[in-house]
Every structure is written in C-alpha cells, then in structure tokens.
Length: 132
Image (cartoon, rainbow, N blue to C red):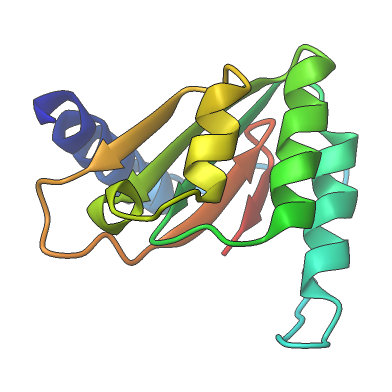
C-alpha cells in the first residue's frame, strides 16, 4: 500500500515538474478530442487508442465496469503491451469485477486502500496519450 502512495506522489510530482518546463518545438502539435457518456462515443474512442498502444498502458480508476474496455486492455496485454491498473478499494468487495477479470488474465491490478476514495479516472498510453 505504501508503494501505491509513493507511486501516486511520484506521478503528481512529475506532473508538477513537467508543467513548469518550457514548451519545446514539436513536430506534430497535440490534438484534443472531447466526448461525453453515455452514447457520446467515449468507449469507442478509448478502445481505438488502446488498440493503437505499442508499449505501455497505465490505468488509474475508481471503479472499472466496461467489459469492452477490459477486453481492449487484455488484447493490448496479449500483444505484449505492458498494462498496469490501480483501482479503488471498493473493487475488493465486488463479486466479479473487471479488476478480477484483468487480474485473472495476468494483468497487474493494485488496490489503493490508503485513501478514502481514489476517484481519478486516467489512462496514459505509450507515455503520449492521456485519457481522463
């Protein structure tokens, strides 16, 4: 549990440091896409990005209930993409959740039980794409 807190602190510190760095010229300017749920295309947009992943997918989420996204994470894992997931402690009491599904498929799933609620919902794909 201390490791999860340490990872979250490092992640936050890195974000603070990166936000203060001067912008460097980029070959390709960043793009933005906005979608809303339900029925706003979010699931399809997330699955598209997961299907493009090549190296790593890091997930932090309060709860995880999307079977199509869980399957896309599993497919990435099967392609050799490093997939890691941190979820809120409420996932421990679910009878069979996506957390259980991912864990049973060999994907590392950590439970954040140190905080009252881990309500973030973030994916970082290949260190370049952020979904929140």
